[in-house]
Image (cartoon, rainbow, N blue to C red; front, side, top):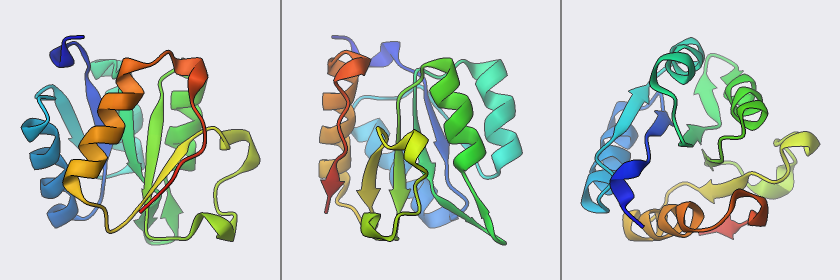
Length: 133
């Protein structure tokens, strides 16, 4: 599988974490990505950039989250991971998005890269919840 065939949408409002994610993707061979810092920017990018995968920060600050973007991705058939500092056991992810993988922050870049490669190497319908540390 050629890694460059994927366009990855990153929704992350924290500049330092966004830089870490970008570096992780580039090191793993995923050079085609778009970074968005707001929910609206991510929704706009879905139309203009046509991502094939996404990494979504759950909490976007100011009492905002990425649920609207997650639902749009789900409806478009685009797989995604939530990146969050919240414990999955808190039940913050709505039931109808229960197939989304949850990657806990802080994460190890090599581990995140491995999970993305695994996700993009398998058919979409084989997704399972993942409690990753």
